[in-house]
Amino acid sequence: MRNVLLLIIVILTSGCSVTEKPNIIWITVEDQSAYFFPFYGNKDVSLPNLEELSRESLIFENMYATYPVCAPARSSIITGMYPQSIGTHNMRAMHYDNYLENDRNLGERTKWDSSLSIPRYSSTIAESIKTFPMILRQNGYFTYNDAKGDYNFIINDSTWSEYQTKNDLTKDKSPLFAVYNFHGTHEGSIWQEDKSELMVNPSELSVPEIFPDDSVVRHSMAVNYTNLIKMDERVGKLIDKLKKEDLYDDSYIFFYSDHGGPFPRHKRAIYETGTKVPFLVKFPVGKNEKVNKKQLLSFVDLAPTVLSIAGVKSPSEYQGFAFLGKNKIKMEREFLYTSSDRFDNVPDRIRAVRDSKFKYIRNYNPENSHALNVLYRKQMLLMRHLTSLHLTGQLDEKSDNWFKSPRLMEELYDLENDPFELNNLSLDSNYTDIKKKLSLNLDEFLLKIDDLGRIPEEELIKLISSED
Image (cartoon, rainbow, N blue to C red):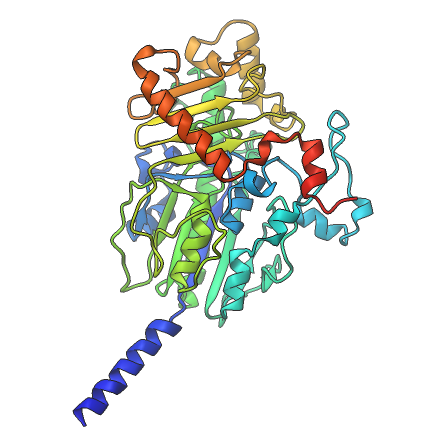
């Protein structure tokens, strides 16, 4: 009898571990750097709802977007792949939401800027990758995305159970994977909300050393913090909703931004301000894991990690690794890679690698300034202001370096002592060995992933696109 009871206990226990599929909820914001948030030490703004969530969460200190701009970064999130390895690295190749609006009529796709003469295109390589929400659906999950389909390629129709419906889809859907996107902190809001009432005092803010300390900079920062406060209020309402539906306690909740901040030398910048994002994870009540919160993490890790939490094996082609869940790897990343290519109408190519202390940057188009002539960004008063100060010689060296053209082909920064990457050590003979080590590592990485950024986009389209 005792043996029978033990057998029953083993069967029941085994069944629970196999069939357990926790709810997983993502709260995402746009265009925000990690250093803007109170739970990373910022004293300029109070975000009570996120701060309360952070107190119940693991706060990861080193999560990085693969690209410092939205569509390529999201392509890596949903596929677990580096954008330049699947042809989604140029901003923007394809906007899925617009594609849906065009009724999938290829003939109606408009062309880009006339100076490029490049049509919208979707990479067939990216389309061949099983997105992680699709895999979750195949394993019994209800997958929901409330707003954002901007993944830079045409995702499979079976990715989302519901998309852009704005319905109360979380209730009674289990197991659930849901993404809630908050757009109000986007770069465009810096000028769209420029005349709105401020919720912080500009004169009391700390100005990072990459900017001049003047009224325009302070006002722009105050606008962003105001946008963050409004976002935090919306997050609070969502959390209240999750609690009312008995989803809060029983769910993994992720919070992160799609890349760095909305300002110049943030969004589209290969620097920490453009790639290092806030990231925290709240566990279901009663669950926890021993995790190194300082480890180097990348957006390519999100897909395998969610699948690991769900108890599902990741596809072998995924290039990231799980840092939580059943399939969490034991070794931590020694090197982390970030990149950038074309931004809107401006071609460029930059690759970067960092270890625990140093970052090496390689500029393939040294004739470019880092302050690329992106038309969309020119709508921002701060961008126009900084450009004017540069042209009239009124910026100090630290602020002006971003505008310099030509730029050096190589950059090297000591991130521990120079977190804003202002002191380029690439020409310092004391750091020759470090630069060589990181440069060789970057070469190996680019070869390993078959970096498609080496191919001119006009030729790339013929190789990877389903277009005529």
